[in-house]
Image 1: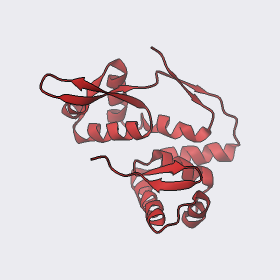
Image 2: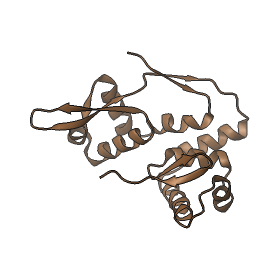
Image 3: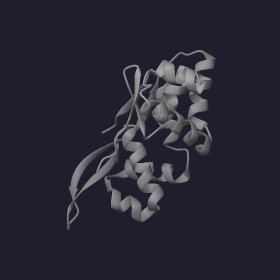
Image 4: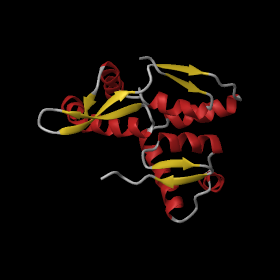
Length: 166
């Protein structure tokens, strides 16, 4: 079955662009498009980076999950949610520049900014507009950065820390 990801908000491009930002991510996505795979299978093929990629895809709603019996136990299996993308957005050049900046930012620089945002949230500063001013980036860039992060999420006009699954 073919599912189409319809993008009306330009910041939704960030997860799509990040899904293919490395060879491992691209290969994991391709494998998941071909069929259901468990975390264990992905880790066997791609190591720790493959396992981390699954977490990123799950946070970005690019994969669906189901419980699958593997012979010895029941494990969570993953499969790509979308096979096509339809972009229906008209935005000012400045906003698309902000989105591409957030998506293509160097990993070290991103992690540094992600930590600044996380510190602000932990200090109780959760409104996106306040955090945007504090870190010196536009609201559009901030939204792209949060959508890229596996530690943060938007909830209305607030930014929250994502709690790790145990």
